[in-house]
Image (cartoon, rainbow, N blue to C red; front, side, top):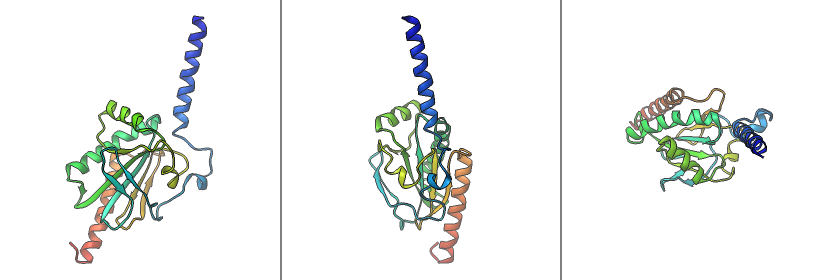
Length: 196
């Protein structure tokens, strides 16, 4: 009986590892079936309530840069990515919600997890980013079919100007540099138009 239980527990452990690993990858689909939106496309129109009670809208017109990130806390790539995103979020928060005078808004969305699952992981890792946990893939499927993490940077006109996935996993430095280029372009446009 003990041997049966030991074997059964080992089987469950292996099965859990495989399921966690498969949540990160989607290499079996052709590229055209993985991506729903790409750089140069308008961001899908959505509005969600985040875990802190604030609302995030993808609509353009507010002069904001938007960072839209998808994750799954069981995904090992996401587990390496989320602290990088938290570091970026903390920098923006310290700067009053801005980078280089441009407002930056975050939508950190679980691909398909409940709020309780995400909150548990957030508590374990002391994350402070507000999140959206829809428990289904309806929002995620407006952007992609497979693979997390995913990050989309959206300019103030509502156009996706950068996209990152798991190859390689986006770091704080990569995301910060991309946002810096975007804020510089936006500031240059405003200066040329006499706004700043």
